[in-house]
Image (cartoon, rainbow, N blue to C red; front, side):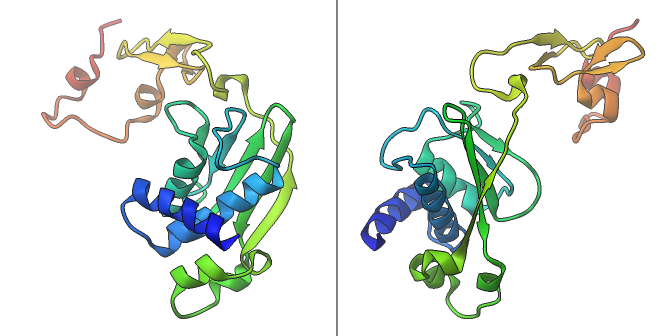
Length: 194
């Protein structure tokens, strides 16, 4: 077990750039989940979708070990801010959620070393869960492409909003997370006259 862990930890380190507590914990959580789903982490598991609940080091371990990625639509980011993830095998309709046991967060000392060596039952919580993904969230070619009626940008996979009977991207409908550096909002969004 420890030898296998070190192999996958090294793989995660190569991807992430260094070793830290989150990477060690992510490696342990990933290996536990894949074991629970009877998947071999040394092989490419094309029938695996992971929903990560945090955008921290843990998710790099998940990506490095599983090969799941946003670009392949096999890695999803659910912004809960928790060191947890759901690993889903759509072929067998099985899903497990792995998270850190609360007791392990109350320790002091070298957390990286603790995450590397602690018995799994002291560190990892595994729970079978039911998961239903929207068909628009599954890997593969886009099932739908619309054009925003305001900015004209293409919007993939049913991510538009109906605003007064017109399909609109979420940025135009709700306000974007960015603004134009020139201060000309309409020009930066390419807003067309009705």
